[in-house]
Image (cartoon, rainbow, N blue to C red; front, top):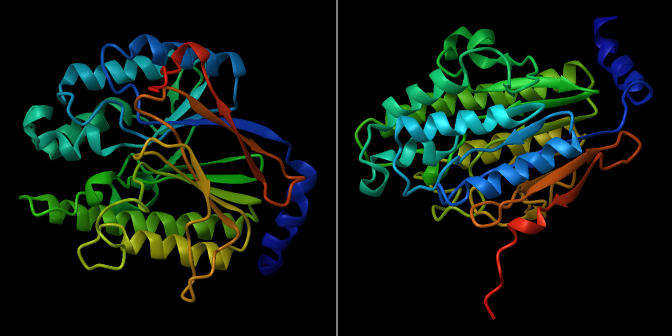
Length: 316
């Protein structure tokens, strides 16, 4: 009986699940405080659309903006402006890059601890109508540090947030960085594996991963031993092949709206059930509406959510 339960769930989901829409955004506000009004307008636009939830994929400030308490607390105020729920994944600008002089020369691990205290104190999202989430810290005692890694289910689709950041995922020759990377990388791999396993157990229609890093644009080759992303790309690729149903990977980092299929098998063939959405950001203060329709074989479709007043004037 237990063996046929996932099949029964899979057959039941299409009849039970309904079409829904969420919003993805990230890498904003960058130019502070100048971008605060633009970001507020975008949040107001998202509130008017009234998605089931929003996902912010990190970098709540520019890398050169000082990593002060004020900046982190200000990002919390922005999240509180969302009328619905907003799930946040951590970016490198909030902690990894804070050791740099323009960012204030902070201790990255101290900054990360502060971000966790402010944004991840409870097992729920941010926003005015938060949703409950399951946290890796609560489900996997071996990885109790990672309160930011979360998962939730909506209308038969499994969502998983994973703490993967730019700057080579903090795998850098800086005191304490390799050790931090190794521990978090192990936690992330376990969380990704569990995400696929949970989606398989419950017969999910699809699976969404949300993280910050653009793993397909970083300078370090992914198959290089010095890459902080090689393990993650491999885990996503192998998991997507086994899962066989639609997988969506949402991230930011490079600030250019991109929808493509970057995962490849060993023969370099495209993994066709895996799609990535890279959201716009930085100077482009807009978002993306993601429609999830169980009646569509691809499950996911995308519409830019633009605020005309936020548009930058082209340089001719």
